[in-house]
Image (cartoon, rainbow, N blue to C red; front, side, top):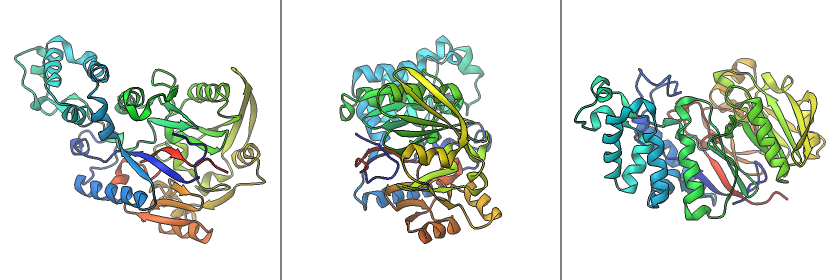
Length: 394
C-alpha cells in the first residue's frame, strides 16, 4: 500500500462495479442523487468490466469494493458499526427503526452489503405499523442508495503508506465514506494501515487531490472541497512528513468543474492534460510548514507553482481538444479525467477523440474505453479508480 505520484506504475486499484444502486435512479430522483441521466445498467456494467479488464491486462490487481465490504461484514464489530450507522437516521422514527433493525439482522454479509450500497425501498419491507412507514410513499427509500459509489476516487486517497478517508460534501454521498472507513479499519487486507483523515473532519474529496510528485500535493478548492478541508489535509500530510509542499487551487464552483481532476490530470512525470480555458487563469496558494505550523504564500500561476514544488523547469500541458468548442465539449465528457497506469500510458474515454489524439501526438499511449453510460454520473477513469499501490516514483 503505497502511492507517491499520479503516474508511476499502477499495481493495485480499488473499483466499484455498478449494480442495483444504478437501477434505483429515476427521473424523479436522478438530480438529487447527482446523476445527469438514467444509465442503462447492464451496459454500464459491460463498460465497467471492460475498464477493469483493460487494467488487469496491463498487470494491475483489481479489488472490488463490494467484495471487500462483504468480507468486512463477516466481522461482528464492523457489522454492528455499519448497521448502527443506517439505523441512526432520525427520519426513521422508533417503530420503523425497529423493523429495519430486525430486517438487517436477518441478512447474511453479502446481502447486507448489497443493501448498504443499493438501499432499501419502502415496498421491500413489511411493517406492522408506525406513522413513518404508513405515511411514506411506496417507492420512497428507507435506506438511500449510493449510485456515486462508482467513483471510488472520492471517498479515499492514499498518500504514500497512509490513507485519507475523506469527508464528502454532498448529502447524497456522505454515507459512502462509512463503508470505506469500515473497510480500511476492519478488513485484514488493510491491517495496520494508518488513517490520515476521517469523515468527521472538514470537507475534502479525493477528486480534488493530486499527488503531483513525491512530497508534493495539489488540492482543488471549490464545489466539493472547502478551504478548511484543504488546510486540514495540508496540515496533516506536512506534519506527518508525507509532503513538503501542498498547493491549494481554487476552481469554479460549477457542475462541469466539480473537482480539480475534471480540469487537470497527470499523464507523465512532467506532463498534464488540461482544460485550456483554465490553464492560464488557474492559480495556487503554496503551503509549507514545520510540524503543525503552516506557512501560506500568496497565489501565483498554478503551473508555475507546481513546477517549482516538483523541482522541474516546467510542466508540459496537453490541451483538451483543438478549439474552444471541442475543448468545452470534451471537458464536459471527462476528457481531462485520465487514469495513468504508468508514465506516458493512460486510460481515457474513447469519445474524446480530439483530446486522445492530442495525447498521442505528445507521446502518450491512450487505452480507450467506452463510457457512454458510466459518464452519466459525471466522472471518467480517474474518478472511477482509487490507486492503492503504485511503484515508488524514481
